[in-house]
Image 1 (tube, rainbow, N blue to C red):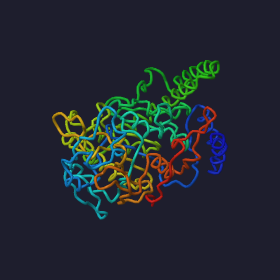
Image 2 (tube, rainbow, N blue to C red):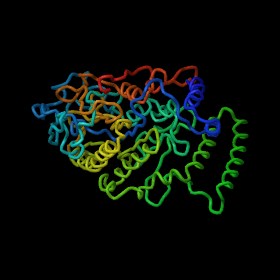
Image 3 (spheres, rainbow, N blue to C red):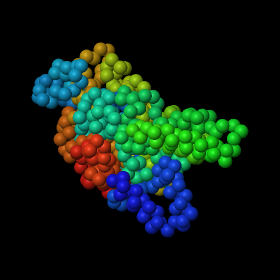
Image 4 (tube, helix red, strand yellow):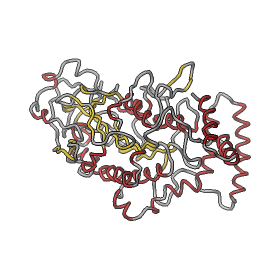
Length: 471
C-alpha cells in the first residue's frame, strides 16, 4: 500500500499539470514530513469527516429507537422475557436476571417527511431528520466502556492499533501542509484515554492533534513564535534542530517516534499562522454564534466546520469525556436527568452543524457521524439505588450519520420490539468503518499496513460496506 501510493502520488501530481517549481515545492514539503493529498481507491463521495462521540453509552431507547411495547412489559423481570443466552455477556460486575423491564422515560414523535421517530429531548435535531441516516441495528463486541471506545475508534479490542482518523490520513493524506490532517477536540479524558487517538504502528505524522478551543489561547501548546526572531531566523533555527534530531534518529533506527517528533516540529512551524486563524471563532459573524450556541460543545461544532472548510481531513469531537456523562446508571444521577442534560447541551450544536454545512453546499462532501460505545438495556440495572437507570448494552443500539453521499431521511436496520437485539439489517461497528472508508474513496480491504509480518487494517478481518445507505 505505502510503496504504491508513493509512486502514484508523484504521477498524480504530474497529471495535475503542476509546474516544476510547484512540484519541487510539494516534494520538499513531503521530505520535511508534510502529508500531501493521495488518491483513493475509487471515486469518493465525501472529502472530510466530522465524528461526534458521546462518551458513556447514550441510550437508544431514550433518543432515536422508539419502543412503545416496553410499556406493556413494564415491571416484568428480565428472566421472564429473555432467554439465558440473551442475558449473558453484559457488565461482569452485575447480574441482570432480576432486573425489571423499564419503559421509555421520554415521549417520542415522528418528524420530517421521512417520519423518523425522535425523542422529545432533541427538539432541534428533530427538525433536520430528513438529512440524517439512522442506523438502528448496530451491535459491537463489548459492554465495557474502555473496550467499547477502543473498538469504535480502532476496530480492535486491544489498545495500540491506529485510530480511524489515522487510517484515513494514511490513506488520503492531507489537503493542507500547514494544518494537521486529523484534529480532536474534547472536554476531558475518556475512559479509554487518549490512546484511542494514537497512530499505533503507522508513522507518527498520522497521530491526532488534540486542540483546545478557548478564546485568547492558542489551540496547541507552544505555538506562539519566540519574540524577537524573524521568520527566516526561526526557519534556520528549526533546520539546525532538525538536522541534529535526524542524526540522533539515524543512530536509533528502532525508534520511529523520533521521526514523528521531527515532523511535529515542522508542522508546528507551519501552523504558527494558519492554526491561529482557523481556530479564531471571533472571525465568525454574530449570526453564526447565535446559530450554534455558546457552550463548549457548540464551539467545538463551529470549529469543526471551520476546520473541514479549511481542508482538515478528519475531525473528532468528544462530548462528556470526563466522568462518562452519558453513562445513565441510577447511582450516577439517573437516566432522566442524565439524558435531559446531555441532549440539551448537544442539540443546538449538532443541528447547527448540519444546517450550516448544508447552507454552504458542504454537506454532500462532509460526512457527520454521531456515535457512542454502546446503548442501554431495556431493563433497569441490577443494583439501582435511588434513581432509575439502564445498564450497558452492546447487542442492539442506534448511531446516525448525515451528508457525505448517504441517503438522508433513511432509517436502516432495527432491534426487536423491546430494543434488545439487532435483528433487521444488523450492522457491526466493522461494517460502519468499512462504509465510512468507502464513502471517502477507500477500500477497507486494500487499506493495509504491513506490521509484524501481517497486513493490518481498520476492519481487522471483518467488515462489509452498507450499500443500502449510500445514495
